[in-house]
Length: 381
Image 1 (tube, rainbow, N blue to C red):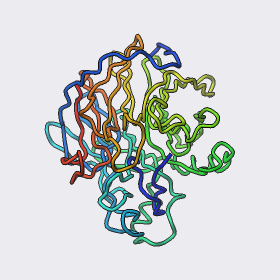
Image 2: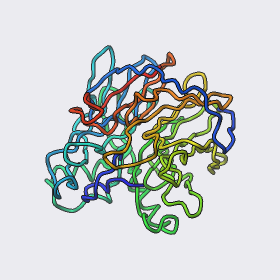
Image 3: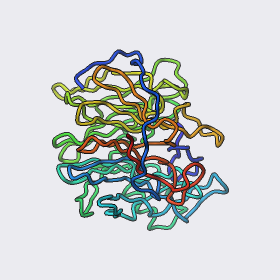
């Protein structure tokens, strides 16, 4: 996966059901864009979303990097304490956790920091990107380096009032796992980039886009690898699992950004079941493109946000158009928001069935290009 190797100066990425479907793409239906309404704008790289029973929206904002830069021009790495977790309720945005580490390029486009949030028995589980293994020993102010070492790749548990602490170094554990499994990706491992989170009972599940795995964190903070998502032999890239959600059947569903190809239609959704502590992963559906977020509504319909429907492409002239794909219980697909979404990422379904997506998810609050209002949360439909 093309991504920023955090704090090392490598060029930034543009990112950065009981029913079993056929492994072939399910039939498509629809195509007429649903209405897209802006709920809140001027967010800094909004990624993962969660909606509680009272309809409050919780947003992982990856931040806008910072003013501490190393390197030159567009290849510079800029860091700062600009990432946050926000709450939107009754028309008001409140940053309940602030001053988390953020890493990006000049201007804050595509920054990384807090990238996912889930509800945890009334509280919050937050995932930070990357891992402490990617933090250099020098080159940035000490407070920034200390924050990076303490926070990158961490599972953060927080009350809704904002009291928080780190609970597990998921990114570092995944990095170590890949270092002992380099044969799986000799040209990329070791690597780690936690990107999606789900809470089921007393366990937290994390999709790692860099390590290509699904990890489990137990109540004591121990991390173990449940499943590795392999791609077909000869694929030009890896799978890049980006999101995880529990289905109405109790299984976990994991969406991929790439699935082994940068071209459209290569991303898969895996269904993962646990039996006797062992995970069993099977491809549940194919034919998606650049999945970034996924989840279910209260009726059991599955949704996936597609970051770039024309295929992952970091060229400045590439199409920024994204989509939300709904898969109903019969396996039929409906495309929502077509032509109205740009680089969408996180997904959440509200208690009343409303569908929310983080739009312009690689934009800082000041905006750029097709995202003049910066990062947004939008309601689709």
